[in-house]
Length: 158
Image 1 (cartoon, rainbow, N blue to C red):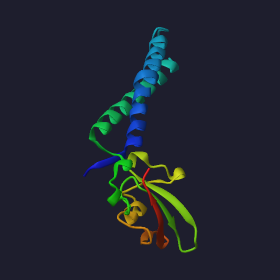
Image 2 (image 1 turned 180 degrees about the horizontal axis):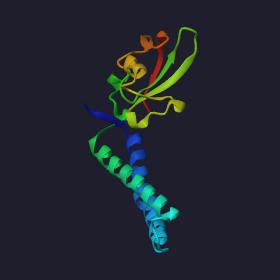
Image 3 (image 1 turned 90 degrees about the horizontal axis):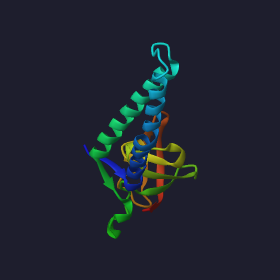
Image 4 (image 1 turned 90 degrees about the vertical axis):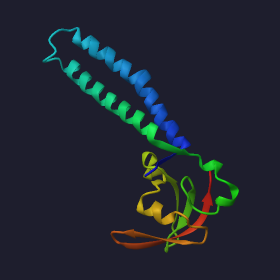
């Protein structure tokens, strides 16, 4: 199954990878080398902690490299005019519930989820329910407390 990400999300992952490779990893390597030069490594907390941190950075770098290779980058702004009337990956959607409460969500990939800013996965129950809806449609989302009906108020492509 394809793994999608917006151009903004891909740039954020690339920036994180660059930060780890260019700044954080070289800094921790220097700290570990300095701690190792102090002698006995078995009881040297700085050395032990530094090696642990280095493994964490290497693991994250490996993950980011592999993840970036497998991603399909989608630019929501490049969506054709005729296809902008429905909710698809990358769309920003304004919805309203039965009580009149409005919320805004952007449909993004798993690597970009940020509930505080309304960025939800297209594979989440809410994201999946909103897919292919048009303004005026009602999306029914299953939740542990029962079904929630959300009316699509607006769709934007940024």
